Image 1 (tube, rainbow, N blue to C red):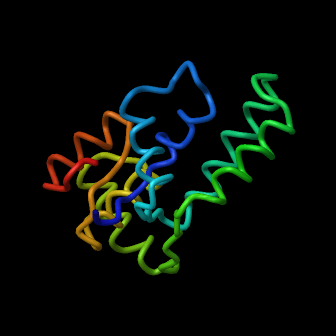
Image 2: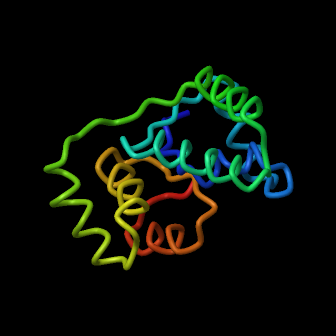
Length: 137
């Protein structure tokens, strides 16, 4: 089983059970079973932002944030650090071409560059992946 690119949208469904689906649970099961995931350098910041906003809105507690971070740190997820140059060139161009945020384009760029499937529940990102002929996990 080859690596996949993991979008933060999937991981956040693991925390918020009302958003979990069979698809997001299957991605978690695959990672727990040893499949490797890759994510762009923005991934931990996206996760952290969702957690801090959820805490502010009293949707989760700091203890739940800490437990989630500890649990995800045990999963085989590696972040790709490609520097600002890549973000300015390739990612920015992909964001323009597919009308994505630069954040979402960073996931698509990594999947394209590494020829990996993309795991996401974000519909615009899924549509862009299909248009770019990137497999969906």
